[in-house]
Amino acid sequence: MMSKAVSASAATQNSLHRRTFLAGATAAAAAGLTIVQPQAVRGSAANSKVAIGLVGCGGRGRWIADLFVKNGGYQLVATADYFEDRANGAGDQFKVDAKRRYTGLSGYKRLLDSKPDAIVVESPPYFHPEHSMAGVEAGCHVYVAKPIAVDVPGCLTIGEAGRKATEKGLAFLVDFQTRANDFYREAIRRVHAGAIGPIASGEAVYYCGTTWGGDDALKADPNNPENRLRAWGLDKVLSGDVITEQNIHALDVATWIVNDNPLKAVGTCGKKGRVDVGTCHGSFAVVFWFPNDVIVSFASKQYGTGYDDIGCRMFGPKGTLDTHYGGTVVIRGLGGGSYKGGNTGNIYADGAIRNIADFHANILKKDFANTTVAPSVRSNLTTILGRTAAYKRAEVTWDEVLRANEKLQFDTKGLKA
Image (cartoon, rainbow, N blue to C red):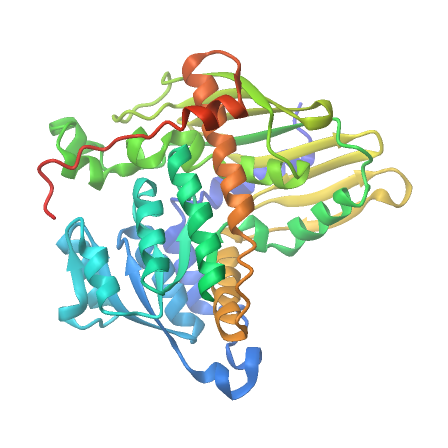
């Protein structure tokens, strides 16, 4: 029997599915953004706008670009996307000079040559390491969507890009909405301070329905690289599969709470239940072993209807931490260990809005510690460990995955440069 908290969270998730409510989130953002105004950051110096280039102009890219513009501290000056219609669509929407709309695989290079102050990386995850590192090397601040990469070499590249950014005096921020939420922050701070006692075990879930479009083109010609790019969310190489592209939200929270990387994992996955085409799996089930004998079970689905949840629970001898993306965050503990928390509401939009404001503040204050990079590398590698164990249906260790250093390959033959 579901607890009231889980039931309420599931109902919330049905109405706030992170992909399908984009239009609603945009409307809510337009109605009234609760952001930190740049003028409040550093006096008159904060009035200067940060010139940004958008790399990846699909639905998510245009949605978040709108939030950047509405922040007031940014000006969108260039767009880049493999597809001309997408680069121009964003360019028209944000009144970008036609000469600063770039297409093809190397469009991001020409965007960097135009010398924006910062880039916003919203391309398919396969390209995130390449685009982010190029941005740092070009002297740009970098704001990148999760997941940061689809494989181990990509994760290591992002880690290096973050270190280089700090050395060069550049901001580098990875956009996880949960980490920007005050209820998550306070609850996890309390757990780290001992509110539930030593963590003994936990569970993380990501249950949702059909998420991605683009399968019509894939049905017609699944091997066409342009069709794969259009429908990258259905492609396990371009997206990293469901566990890396989407389920990372739940596993990022789990590794944040445990505050360590897992030692090993065993798991399985399947495609039963999916009605769309593509190479991604429909479900994953993985058990992770963390240091100090902490065991965390993980399960996900990306098909069906009737129950959605992005949740993470951690159990200790003194209480339970119960978190839900778009639902409640609470600690039920003994004595003074309880924390009533609250409902995270429209965290998908609100978290991005706060991250955008923080990115601007970091640039103005010259705060280049870039603290979001290391935990993002950790949680991304955790998803790859789980994916590897599930594909092999065998126990796999963290060290084995790092030593293998497997690189996923997307053949770009036939695509325009």
